[in-house]
Length: 458
Image 1 (cartoon, rainbow, N blue to C red):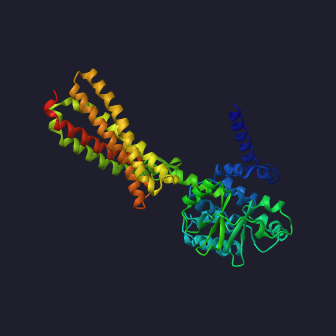
Image 2 (cartoon, helix red, strand yellow):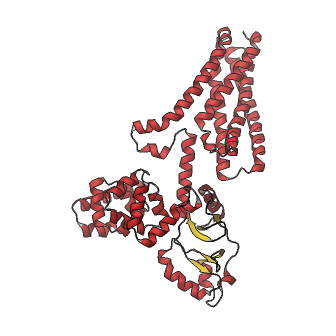
Image 3 (cartoon, helix red, strand yellow):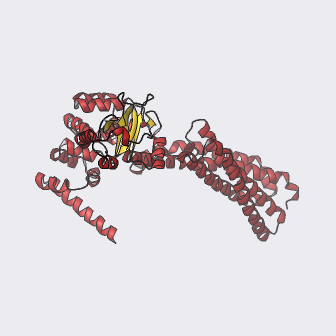
């Protein structure tokens, strides 16, 4: 009840702001709009049509617009359209006011000519920071780090360090962790803001800092960065080059974006869709275009399954009742294979599966397949015997289920591990893909056994 009331209030307030915007009541709109949280401002912006966005640009400064743009959640291709609505100088000033890493995320979605144009008219200091980050490969620590951080030296006092902190804090991404460097700008340690505040002013930083600081290479994959920050519960993580020079920091808000992005990517692949987020707001034609490649691949694999069944036409002609159990065998294989796939993909994504435990995973999944296969197989024997009154047929179907579940479970676990070994994203072994593969395996096992023991069937 409370949620619905809150939604109604937000909807009413959004309509109220929109009315102020349409009437060009600048002072009233600014007073109410700028009191909103930046997330709510971004939500309001995302719902505006083009004329309303034009009116908003007239009422807000580039700095105020930068706060909104850092929180918007729009499709990547829409950045170009929205920036083109702004005056180039306004857009450049807005990008200058954004955090360097957020500005880079936006510029990465533009053409090189547009990027060069904005950097030319942008504030020189901001442009230099952004250029430095643009050089790093996408999806690495360097591409998501920010250079807006406070660094102090190990050979200075707490008093002088606090002076630097007060001066630079307004421009810094975070000050909860203060990183310490030596004379050559190597990362030497870290000190929390709390420890810095309670330390005696005349104490040297080298005496109170923690030298055991965890850092990541600038070329480290962003997924590994997210894993480290999750495991250590860090709010910020320093990024260094191969010589251990401090280059920037990665903050927890950037990592949350990475985790969301990686989760969406893995879910898309497990569902056999190129990008699940990208298909939500698109028209049916665009959504179909994104799903067709996987569906066409699965269509050909399905044709292989049909062809395989055709090879056992004689067996089916002699014992037609066998056809009844084809969906059962195939469905069980697909289900158990998808379960094993989910376990393996998650283990690889979270880092829980190390090199030495991959064999143990396969052994465990094989044992799981044997237990589930034996349980389901015995149940099938009993059901088929009661239903058809044929113990041999029941045994055939039961043994097929038993064998299929073992093989399908192993395949579901092994294929992601194999892909990971060859540096292929294991999530590509999607649910539909592994299901179709296991259909082929299950049909081969089922009809192979049926053909072998044909003489015993009624």
